[in-house]
Image 1 (tube, rainbow over the protein chains, first blue to last red):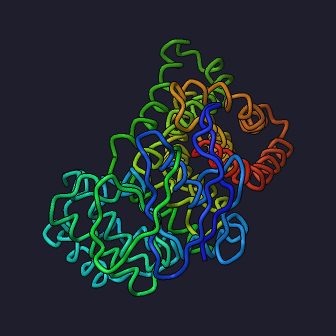
Image 2 (cartoon, rainbow over the protein chains, first blue to last red):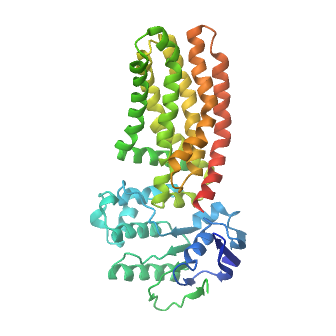
Image 3 (cartoon, one colour):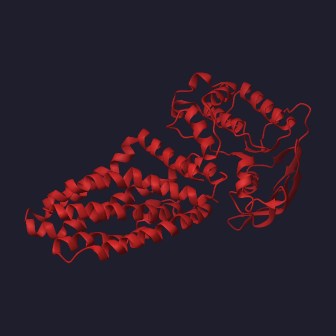
Length: 205
Length: 222
């Protein structure tokens, strides 16, 4: 499904990594590992199509992701360092607008259910500005859940989450992958996905 | 496709409604700049009538520049811009929607205030009508071309000053034909030619600007 071959990335004349490649199919998780500044985020941005690699290619369903922009956009969801939510909107509005921009219709009940699942049912009508960092992260994760994407690309999804939050994310990823989904992620914390062994990929070493 | 365009526009208008302070700054700036001229130049009606159209138009350019920087910057900072770029629709629609939203938020209020400001310059009714018409055709050009500058300078330090240098020269034709149309009414030489050229300029910007700024945006986000 998702395949990358010979990827290289340069940042300001410096080669971060080269010859990175992998194949990921349904029901598989890829754990990208590497120290700070080794290019994990750069790799994920290349995979979701925000950056262009210095060399190599990324294919989705055997088509380059640039060509398959429309389909890839529908089937892939990305959670980056920034949460991608507007501070002036409530979590509910954030979810519904994000869905509309992806061409989906998200009714109030479904949005409410997702927010409930990430433990934000009491903050539905507050502007995101007044939420804590961890709570805003949870809004981003709720948005990920409602996206119905096949491939999740997650950059440090555990940042800012409390112990319950980490367990919640682990369960989310596990359920998603067991149901036939795919995930590419980076994290510095060990991840307990019981019953699943992620493929690992080390970059920049 | 059209639904995506409308969603982008609705979203930006909603956000502007939530942050009315930011939004009003540019409008007040427009009113202040235009009102300073009669005070500075003196109350000589003939003189004011000559400079009036030009002053209102220059102030409209500057007010539009003032609000340009935020067209993409806020969304870039909180990561929503990346999500919109990754959406299944062409990025050209995103930049077109952003420019239209910028026009609705910043351009339309200018149209509504302009006749009031024109009275300060002793402009006759005919000229006031032409002022609004020329601004109605001209301000979308400002938003469209401005989106290119906003996309190019995204994420740069001191981007505000750079936008001004990049975009003001592109605004010159709109200024010449826009102010020229009003002067045509005042001098009795007619304004059809000016309006046609302004309209043609709008069509060209509508075709090219969203496309160029989508490319610029991709480079800036990378």
